[in-house]
Image 1 (cartoon, rainbow, N blue to C red):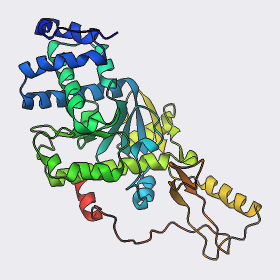
Image 2 (image 1 turned 120 degrees about the vertical axis):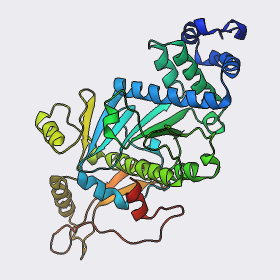
Image 3 (image 1 turned 90 degrees about the vertical axis):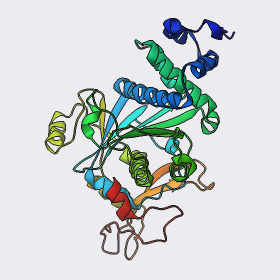
Length: 357
């Protein structure tokens, strides 16, 4: 039975109590109060504040670290993710922070949630009336947004140019936003580069005023797309069973080594490392190949990621896999080489992406 709230009974002094007592079906009753209390510009600003704080809180409670080996970044450059979806990849937690080893690349945080996640989380926290109002603005934003209406699940992202902001409550992320959980990377690219998305009332790409990304222009959007693309490729890479992230939470020796190399390691939370295909796996693939009586190819074939999308893949469809390398006539496995192809629609020149990351 739906609990009905009289909009006239909602006041600042009882806002927190009423918010925590309400379920998702009754939060709509607060929207008139939000309209009376805040202008449209203030509502958008408060929704952004709520999204930023709630996503930080979620990561503190259920976040994991992906420390990405430098060679992985090089291996995934040729992976095409244009028509694949974030929710078709393996996640080791609801919130993932990507650390790129031996690199100055911006850190990225991704969260796979539904629209109720942050509301339920906020109800468990100590709130002031201003916090409850911000959460109601966030609820109203998702309830009225045409894209959010169609999708229960969403992906929330944060980008950190200054990595100290991850561990300091006095600092903030460079920018943050959200997109539909089943969006392809092509959808995401279009979402953040259209003229409509650049309007000041856009609600899926936020930058802090006076922050290190306060100019929300085309160059800043390209930086966002480049960061999300790299994180997406890491997720695809780590979705292959033999490349599944390895837990390093108890590996003190490795953690010390990563700290010496400049990686900022959190004090709590699960930690995983994404590494390139180990040599022993290549050897295993080679032995398996010969065990089947195969003779190999004259020049061999390099192994690599493959996305099974065609309907002929009845059990593997919409999953990532590793295509085993084939030895050449001398029994040697070839080195990976990238074939030059015409760019896909909407592609960004590599030199521009590298300049903005």
